[in-house]
Amino acid sequence: MNIGEVADRAGMPAKTIRYYEEIGLITPARDTNGYRAFRERDMHKLIFLGRARALGFTIEDCRNLLALWEDQDRASSDVKVIAKEHLAKVEAKISDLKAMRDTLRGLVRSCAGDNRPDCPILAGLAGQGGDRRSG
Amino acid sequence: MNIGEVADRAGMPAKTIRYYEEIGLITPARDTNGYRAFRERDMHKLIFLGRARALGFTIEDCRNLLALWEDQDRASSDVKVIAKEHLAKVEAKISDLKAMRDTLRGLVRSCAGDNRPDCPILAGLAGQGGDRRSG
DNA sequence: ATAAGGCTTCCTGTTACGGGAAGGTCAAGG
DNA sequence: CCTTGACCTTCCCGTAACAGGAAGCCTTAT
Image (cartoon, rainbow over all chains, first blue to last red; front, side):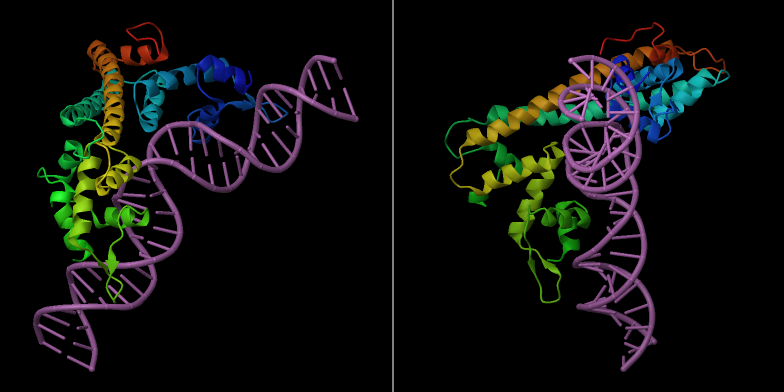
């Protein structure tokens, strides 16, 4: 399989696949013409990577998960630790974003959004309810 | 005021302040010795920038918001448009992360996390069944 | 022979800074 | 006067995970 077909089947750009090879996540063989020659094994890895990335795992997490995946003797606890840590980060990110969202909603709701210059959003960003013109 | 004091008062690293100058968000004066000489006006801008960044606005959003803030004749609708678009992105990000979180929770819950090799997390990532969602 | 499309490598750009080197400046102390 | 140490300056590299695009080779079809 050439990279184009693999990209289609794995649902990711060829650029990404070349990048994964560059950083050592996959090591496809080469044809005599220099083209990458992918085997099923590479496909499986790419599918795995695509799923892990879609769940927000970093590339380094992916590298570790792939290694565990390939290691028949891994302990499932090793995998679970990585997943739990990532889950915690995702949850933290969600709560950060929720705080932003709530503040933004309040600001947006308080702004008339007409052609007058008075804007509670800018006032809020400036702090202390202080618009630059009044400060 | 020198950059150190400004950094303290604005609650951001000096590096960040130099960066903001470099990309034209602020233009502090200079002392004869070459040191940046910040005035209250610069402080206010940095406070504004700190708040806007804390709400997740991009630097380019900040640039536009600052310009509107300085424009006595802006329409509040111009500000509101930026804020609403950003709010929409934040909400989209939250829902993406929630989807990841839910899937991750399912995987983590299904994994024994002991010293046996059987791991539903790896199985899920490999796509051998499990509660993965489409996309 | 030529054109189209796929493949290759290499280089740059992205976001918003952080780390650190090399060196100038300033206030205090001996 | 000299030193020490805390500031400050610019400059350059590194980050995460690729995307865009140039220059050029390979393959297939006409």
